[in-house]
Length: 224
Image 1 (cartoon, one colour):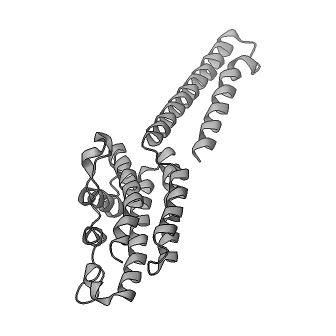
Image 2 (cartoon, rainbow, N blue to C red; image 1 turned 30 degrees about the vertical axis):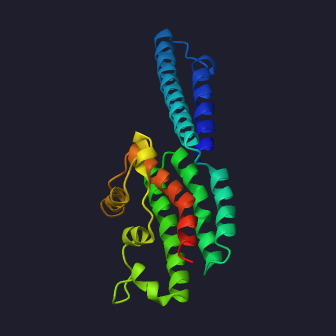
Image 3 (tube, rainbow, N blue to C red; image 1 turned 45 degrees about the vertical axis):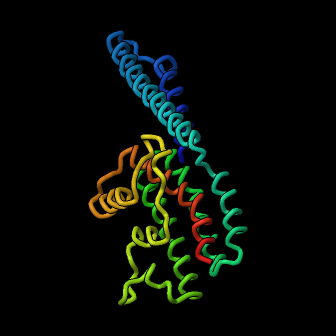
């Protein structure tokens, strides 16, 4: 949708800019002047929106590319997961779960910050569910890592911490630093109270997902 929206704004701005000079004008000079000024004002407004949209869109792409979080990254990581977790229980389902991660860059580029954050969390949660299923089926003694005594699922935040996933923020940029606790606090605010995440929070969610995709294979190998 991002590229389509840019094209739409660009075409609209060009058409609007030409309109004052191509539309036939009334013979009355005052009416003709009023029509020209109206069309010219609309064209200027549309052109301004187009320039802002292109600039903001380009900045988001540039920032995302600076941390190498793109579709190709997620495709390569899927192969890494398949190789490293070949002997891990329920590995096929686990690897399939990270497929959804490649949608995140597109959502971020288009400015869908709420969906970017929810989708990032959803990919991690689905992966954790598949991991829990595999680990519990092979080693029931590890059930407490994922389940309460009454067999209810523990919070995903707690499950990830039990597995040992804790993003190292010391090497992170200031605009991508967010703890797991803060991430899920923002996620809950958006999901239950419709509080939109900020640009920084959204970028932090995407950076957390990237860390999750990079680090989790090594963590899971340590459980075998």
